[in-house]
Length: 332
Image 1: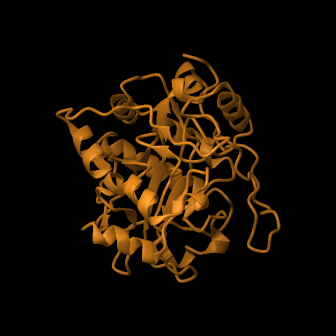
Image 2: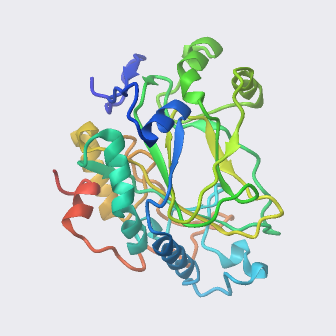
Image 3: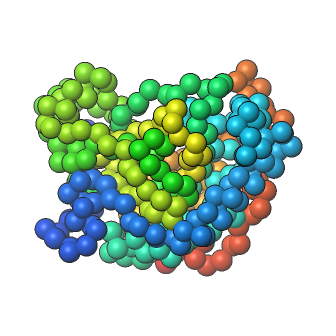
């Protein structure tokens, strides 16, 4: 059975990558701690330009939203967000600036270095814009989780954040539990009943369960980064989105992007990925597996369709061979 096939029975699947004892570069930190920050994967000036393009998109819906005026940072002035401060609808996933960022050489090359191949697929993932000190939206409590099923062991997925804003101690950023990958197998094998395991690649941890991780001496940290930095983490790393404190005035702006070898995808996954792309749709954090079309229609809190809903990107990407291969539209 390949690492990407849907499980028909509860068997453990080993990850496709066998890591080395030492690489002599940032990959050692990634595999030891479960995460790493790669400085200036994108030149700072270009990262700031991507952020501005994201702001321009936000202000393109005909509302009084003004990025410079915190009083306008309200739900009624913003496109519909999920509880995670992310935008998935309105064709945002395939906006030209999103694809331009995904195809940045420094970003693609980092994942190529991890997987030791440049024949990669990329996830169709979302934009996160977190406005600090919003009066109409309380900060969300932590939701520690992993994005990998306990049936999957070893390294299967590396997630990424293309950072477009400053992320200091008071700002919104990724929260991680360093070295939690080391105890991933032990947790599921000793602290859970296998009958409760799910095939889906997502598992949240309760406050009581987090005490077990703490008993291993693990403490959460907020990942600090600058515009243009790339944050990578193993999907077995316990993590969540850290909210800004009331001392922050930084609008967190990041693009989620995960890449994995095209060789890991089944034919069915590739076909589904192509369907999602043609629908200008979004997928999960995984690039080669868990491919399904997420809800496309933006809905208001009352369940009605947002009259601002868009079926395609405002500015479509330039379709070139590199994009086609990353999107799974054309084979390597």
